[in-house]
Image (cartoon, rainbow, N blue to C red; front, side):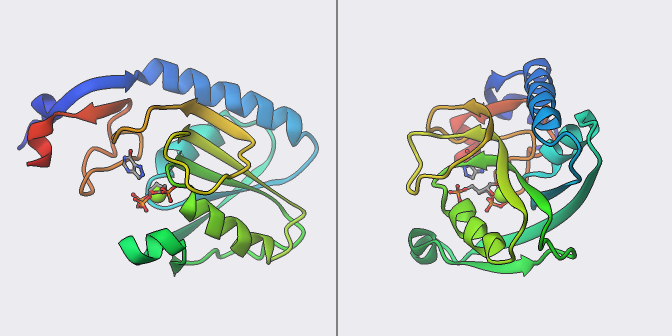
Length: 181
Ligand SMILES: O=P(O)(O)OC[C@H]1O[C@H](OP(=O)(O)OP(=O)(O)O)[C@H](O)[C@@H]1O
Ligand SMILES: Oc1ncnc2cn[nH]c12
Ligand SMILES: [Mg+2]
C-alpha cells in the first residue's frame, strides 16, 4: 500500500523520547570514553538509524565501521552460528570498540559477534543498543548501554523492519494484524 498509515497499530516509543534517550546514552558514552578514540561498529541494516543519531550526539572523536551478518535461519538461529556477509574494513586490534545495535532479541547475533570481535584483540569492547527484549533473551549478553527494555512483541521503525519496510519510521511502533496476512 502506498500509505502505511493504516498499517500502524500503536506507537510504543515516540520520536522525541527516542531522541532524548539517544542523547542521554551519548552523554554517558562521552564520559566513559573521555580522552579515548572510539570506533563505532554498526550491525547492518537495523543499526543505521541509531548510528546516525548516536554518532552526531557524541563529542569524543569517533570513527565508524559496519558489519553485516546473517543467520542461516531457524536451525542456525538456535545454534547461533552466523555468516559474515560484510566484514569490517578496520583492524580493531588495540582499538576501543563500541558495537551499535537497534535491538537485542534472542541475543544470538551479539553473542556470536562478541566472540568474533574479541578474537581480534580490541583494547575494549562494549555494546550500545536502542532496544532490548529481556523476555526473549536466549543467551545473556552484558550490555553497557541500553535505550529501552521493551515487551516481547514485534516492533518496527527506527531501523527495525518487517520484510524490509518501515525502517525509516522515526518512532518505534507495532503493526496492525492485517499487515501480517
Ligand atoms: O538478538 P537476535 O535474536 O539475534 O536479533 C537481533 C538482530 O536481528 C535484527 O537484525 P536482522 O538479522 O533482522 O537483520 P537487519 O538488521 O538487516 O534487519 C536486529 O537488527 C538485530 O541485529
Ligand atoms: O521486534 C523486532 N522487529 C524487527 N526485527 C527484529 C529482530 N528481532 N526482533 C525484531
Ligand atoms: Mg540487525
